[in-house]
Every structure is written in C-alpha cells, then in structure tokens.
Amino acid sequence: MPENNDSPKAKRVYIPLFVTVVAFAMLVVGIWSGEPGDVWQKAVSICLSCIGIG
Amino acid sequence: MERLRLISQHIFALLANAYWNFPTKGPIYQGLGKYVCLPGLNCYSCPAAVTACPLGALQNFLATIRFNMAAGSARPGFYVIGILSLVGSFIGRMPCGWLCPFGLIQDWLFKLPGPKFRIWRWLRYMPYFFLLFFVILLPLFALDQAGFGMTWFCKFVCPAGTLEGGIPLLLMEKGLRRAAGWLFVHKLVVLVLLLIWSVLASRPFCRTICPLGAIFGLFNRVSWLQLKFDTGRCLKCRACNTICPTDVSFFDGTDDINSPACIRCMRCVSACPGASVRIEFAPYLKSSGEECQSDGCKKDNTCHAQQG
Image 1 (cartoon, chains in turn green, orange):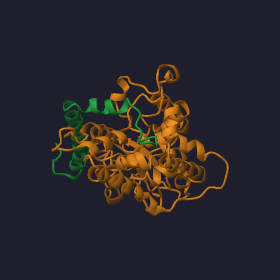
Image 2: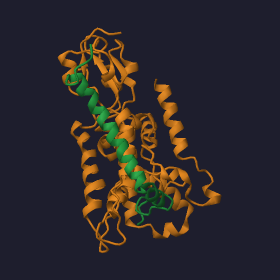
Image 3: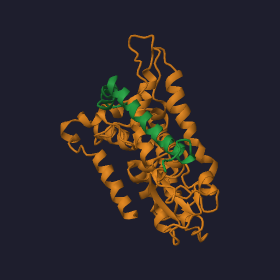
C-alpha cells in the first residue's frame, strides 16, 4: 500500500532532502555568480591577518 | 574502525598540504586546488596548502559585501556555505573526526602522557559564540575607515593560521619577520595555550572554539548519516562515554546520540560491548518494518526495537 505523504516518516525524509537540495542550490548559485574566483583570489596570496601580521 | 579513521585523517592532512615545492617555487601554492574549500580547518596561507579555508573564505565574503561601494561585492559566500551545507547534509560533523588536519594535531597531542582533564560542558556552546560574532557579525558590521570589515576570527583567534601559516612563513621570509608585532605575539600565546590544553584535554579547540565544527554540528540531527542507539542492548558500562573525545553522554539520556557536539569519530560504535550503537545511512528511507517506530526513537533517537 502506498505510503501517505503526510505520515511522520515522510516528513522525516523531507527534512534531509530539503537541506541537501537547498545546499546544492546555494552551491550552484555561488558558482554561477563567480564566487570560486573570489575564493581563489584570496587563497593564492598570503593572508597577513591569518598569520598574525596584518 | 579507529585505524581506518587515523588513516583517513592522515591522508586528508597530506592531500590538503601536498605542495612541497614551496622552498623553490614560491611560498604559497597558486593552482586550481585553491578554488575548492576544504571542509576542515587548514589555513590557506600554509605554504604547503593546496585548498582554501572555508572559514577564511566566508569571512572575506562577509567583510567585503557592500552594495553601495564600487570596490565592494554583493556576494555573500553562497559557494562556501553551499559546500559546507552539502557535506553537512550527508555526513553531519563527520569531517571533524575523519578529515580535519587541525583535529588530527589535537588527537596527536592528547596521546602524549600527562594528566587528563574534562572540559566544562557549558563550554560546548562557545563555538556558536565565535561563529556568530567573530565569523559573521564582526566581519559584516565592524568596519574600518574605508568601509570594509576584516577577518576577525583569522586575525585574533585562529591557531591553525599561526601554526600552519604564520610560523613557517616567518621562518622563510625575512620581510615578514620584520613586520611581526604584538598581534603575532597574541596569536602565538593563543596557539601555545591551546596546544598545552590539547595535551591535557581531548579536542579543546573543536569543543570550545571551532566555528566550522559549530556549522557542521547543526547538521548532525538532519544529515543522511545517522547514529542509532538501542537502549535495550545497552549495558550501562559507560564505555561509549569514556572513549568519546567530545564527552557526549547518550547512554544515560543526557545527550542525543546525534548531538551537535559529536564529531562522528565512531569510536563508540567499536567500543560498545553490547553493539547498541550503529551507523545508518538514510534510515528515513527504510520501510516501516525495518525501522524502529517507538516513541523513544522519535523523541531522542533512542531505539527500543530488537534489531541486529
């Protein structure tokens, strides 16, 4: 018998599924808006504040 | 399982710090790997680092997010949050136990002989304080004269930056040595105190400071990977609590087995003589006959079903 979508079990499936989908969507939006380039830009030069100088 | 975890920790630490040409080819790696944020604490200013630090990257996004300045950006760091959330949604805080290079350093130090102490339980909320103030609010709202924020956690707290980036770079670069002042001394003191604490207590940085662990911990109860505890099989021997590096106590109901404090090292799974702790991936998808449906399961993740 097919499971009722309103059952507690179905709701418990929705939560991790929702989190994964939202996370994936944020990743895609971030890549689409060019954020990996910003990450690279900062990561390839010495971060003076990280090492306690700047 | 513990041997597998140790191998994993060492492999990831080596992979994240695989640029050993720095003495001849320049003090810092500038290749494609730096587009990727490692889901662990590893300073991207470490001469050997080949990946970016998610905390440093996130703070940089928040410190420069300005909608009304030509030099500002309107990018809030969805890429970084997306990577961390995606990893967290599958395995929760498992990267802390299996991948994080700074976690590995703390594990090494705790194996040194000496007196061992517990850490006050209320301190486990401090990582949220550091996440909220030092990673999010201060970089966003504490602005300099030019109208930009700064990376507060990296600058004033992060011991990984001092250990993996600051000390090696100062040893290599004369110019940087001359520039080092009271801020470096402050960070050195923080590092030394933390390293001493790591000998005396298990994983003090992860448990009382790490904002990355705080982020991953938020996913422990909703991740696809779940730990299950069968109270019917529990012998109340405390083996799980004794061996737990973050002092999670689920056998007596004090903590949830998927507590945000759990770094998912899985040592309790191996240590339990009654096999009452098990790992499940996507337990939500199991048919009703396979999964415990008792009230205990729903409320505190304890399971009363007789399962093998």
